[in-house]
Length: 135
Image (cartoon, rainbow, N blue to C red; front, top):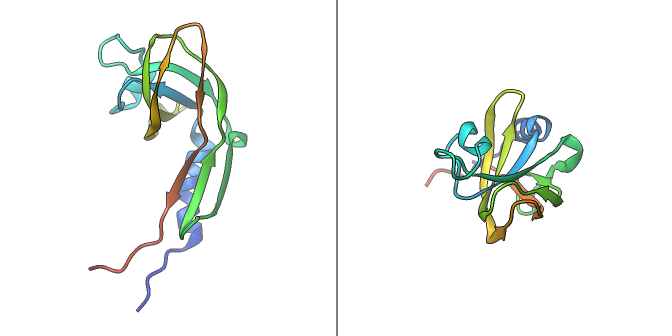
């Protein structure tokens, strides 16, 4: 017997990310919660180095995944205002309306950033894969 997931069910999660992510945050380390993602690095357990405001228009999809399932792509952000010096190694997707940390992922490679400059967040793909048969 084969396994399959309803595309609408997979898209519901991805559309929640697309429609409710309001900022992409460059972080020094992996934030564990919304507060860490929204507090400047060097203040308590804060991780934020810089951030950019986004809307649903800054995402592509959901659409068919490259292998299976469904995917959502955040478009590259080339003008991310940097407020704190540091090394960014994660990007947090946050919902500032509901104070929620939606998603965190490591950068492909850490990048050094300096306050007063602008940083870049490369395009990122989230794939919600089809369920696999139990082993």
